[in-house]
Amino acid sequence: MVSRKGLARVWLQDCPPDKVFWCHDGRVMKNLDELAVALTEMSDDTYRYHVTSDKSDFTNWVGDVIGDATLAKELLEAADRPDAARRVEVRLDWLRKRR
View 1 (cartoon, rainbow, N blue to C red):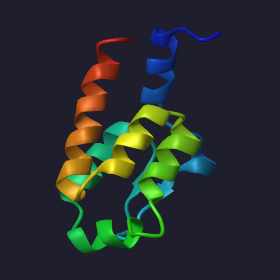
View 2 (cartoon, helix red, strand yellow):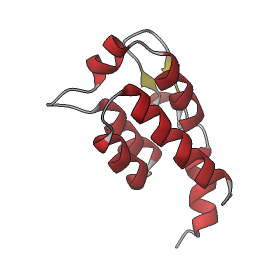
View 3 (tube, rainbow, N blue to C red):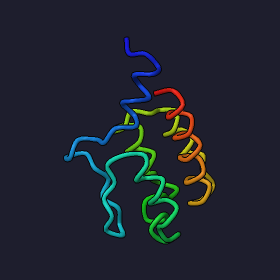
């Protein structure tokens, strides 16, 4: 079993090159820090391309690739792009304190 500290380290690392997130606006994200920046900088249109009533690409990537089910759930509940960015930042702060 991996410790909480070990999980925090894993979740903060870069994902494998074949699992990066290719954003509609052309940026490529390989970790949660880059996701946080992207959510802060991307347009609302780009966000809405990835998050609709039928899909949540960021949620899927964070859950399936990064492996952080807690953050994935938080992103699924985010009201909009600024809320999603804030939730990622809060989670990053929490993870950094535990690595």
